[in-house]
Length: 99
Image (cartoon, rainbow, N blue to C red; front, side):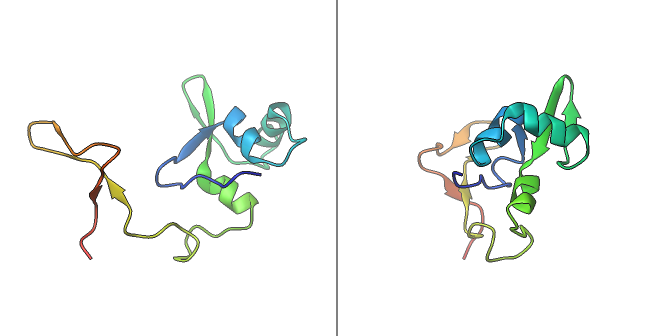
């Protein structure tokens, strides 16, 4: 199983992505069956069925509400100026919070 994505960066995942994060042997079909019988929570957006990333965390036994479970609060992201232009780029993000 690969490292789980940060729910703040990837709040929703496609069913195929969920299957990729689960141990080998759990197929996309098995994930869909678990969604259909209510074992995995999901949301429908148009024709897509998406799974909240926090649902993966729950399945892994991680509580995203715990401060030590989530990535550091000093996360960075690009900011947009009043003219709509990017201030910085994805390679060089601007801090969201002042320390």
